[in-house]
Image (cartoon, rainbow, N blue to C red):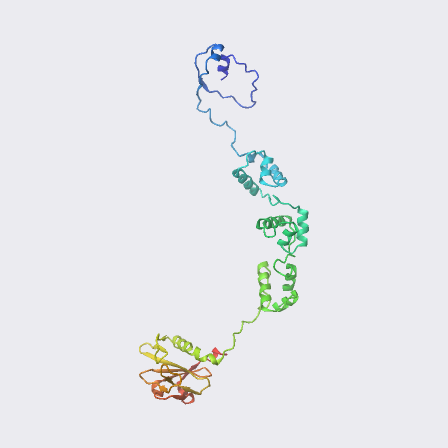
Length: 363
């Protein structure tokens, strides 16, 4: 280009050379030189360039690193500390364009350097935060004292991060509890039972409170191994014999099942209550109950559709065995051959057919 300018007699004395940068030249294919007047009057011809092989390559030693690398780690940390947002960081770094890509680079560098950005967009000072933490009993209380939305998840995360960085004590926070952590620590440490813990905390000694205290202790990582079990296993409601008739069929089926026999219940109305496969013959079993211990039991039935009709005794063609539960939950298994044709029997006379007891079910 210098040769072309010389041919055209153009003054280039006002040009300033850039120090430290070697000049590179590209071969130019130009038209024959003409006079200045002809050059001015005629339209300019397009310059056809033939670049050298290394003309478009970056110079040795030049880096294409992002602008973020221009600032040293110390300077970058200072910029983070005095800025209130990522846009402010880019402004301090001299960026005119604030793309998400550049912000992501700045955020990644801050994370690599372990720099805190909890102060970005905050409307409170560290002194105000210290005062709020000391007077509040929960994180939401801190947010309210600082004039923030107590339900803002992002604000609460920023508060917690800054509190951790300032190493502020939050052991007095109760959250959903009615007592601070240090009081819970002392109550559990100086108590030997959960009852003593509830008394020390001034709450009613009921199961709900003991469960709540234990849940909070587990959440806070407080050891409770030295405390006695919270309470004995809950005792079920006492059994009532008036439900014996409804329970008898289930007890009978369980009794046969536990002995390896397969009981089944008929789907339609039959003279028997169970069909029991006793590894070969299938027995038809009628289940009966007696409210009194070794008392009288009816082993007959009424005709279908009647409630006050005459009793009809069972026959061998109807059932094979009677499974009888008396008021003491003694179990009798009486074959039909021993009582066929009878309407009522006294269990005292059939003690030899007693095969066990389900007494433990009501104790």
